[in-house]
Length: 218
Image (cartoon, rainbow, N blue to C red; front, side, top):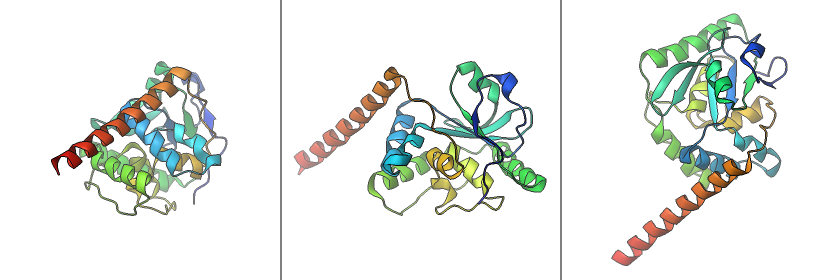
């Protein structure tokens, strides 16, 4: 298992992003119903002591020393930059890992290939991961060649000596944070926390309505 090299730190300003290397990765928070449900599902699979990591809902791979990123988002795998996170004012962590230069090249080559192939986002993987989070089932299903944000980072890390106890496609941001010793992200502001709970209530309500319709047809 790769251990972090140096401190895992929040980088508040672009000027502070120094010393990053290709193969390091970013952990942050994304917003929306999908990510609120991801956070809730992650929390179900973490012990109470580690549940703080569930606030991480996004991951991206660093592919250059200047802060270029390759990440999987709803529109597919894309290139971006640490600058976008700084400009958004979102808290994030840079995890610096200690691997050989060749390992770093392999990680970047893998992510670049996914970018060049216009790899789609792993929506089916998200469904599979949610099923596991809510039920504990070991069944996994995904579309080959598609990636979630953390699945892309995990698959790149497997180009090194890192090995996960589950398929890389199922690795979640909170698991990356736990495994690599990232500090807990800062608490959500009340408004964000309220939005997350509202999303969960809507999800549960839809499930109940759907169950009621099935019973009525019988």
